[in-house]
Image (tube, rainbow, N blue to C red; front, side):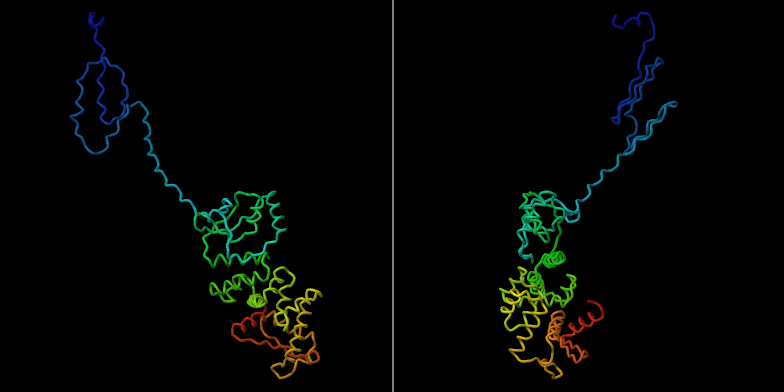
Length: 349
């Protein structure tokens, strides 16, 4: 009874062809039941086993052939992260930034800082500062200390910065150049910055001039300001005396007395040069030119012009004038000084 109605009626029993064993772990397509006599299944284990890949299964004649599945592309390695200094400004915590103790600028006007702080509160910082990485994940300011100070006053927690790997010489040169170009240094700070390049890194005056875009005599004249007494240097720092006044006062027998007179009487640089020359003549006697003639006959304007040219060139200048005709003599001590004078006379001022 268990064979069913088909066995009693003598009808052929429907059977399905046995499914071949899944040798390669791939699903086999389902086949329709057949009524044809059943052939004994082939023993798949009698097939030879090789190490090569299995032959592709042929599709039936009237069925479309599926295109081969493309191999997945290899996973690309992640692009290396660029250094912080190469990707432009980034925001860094303001408490990780510290000032450079060798920064040439020492004086910051309080009123200007307050004005800048108010602007930062309204508009933010429009120009990032320049820093370099130092120990303990911190950064040292190379340029932009005034913006950093104002940002602290404005209560900012982060500040935009460009990060660069710089050595000590580059840090000092960039700080000087940036401040000189922005007119942020007073004459004494500028002179001290130049002197630091000479003392600490052995730079010559010409190398400094090339680095900051100034003439060598300008560097020499600025360095002369450091010969002033400390109290007169302070007058130059706070603007009571200009650098031109200070250089003229340097040559006077009593620089402090002449400085006080310049401030109280509002004298210009030409007045100071004339008074300084008169004071020297009174103390040491009239200057004698290399040709043996005395400067007694020279007018105050001629002596002042000599002093002015000497200050501009950083060299001794003598003017011999007779009835509107004469000569100008420039004394030099080194070939470097001579080359500089020639360059300037040829138009390379």
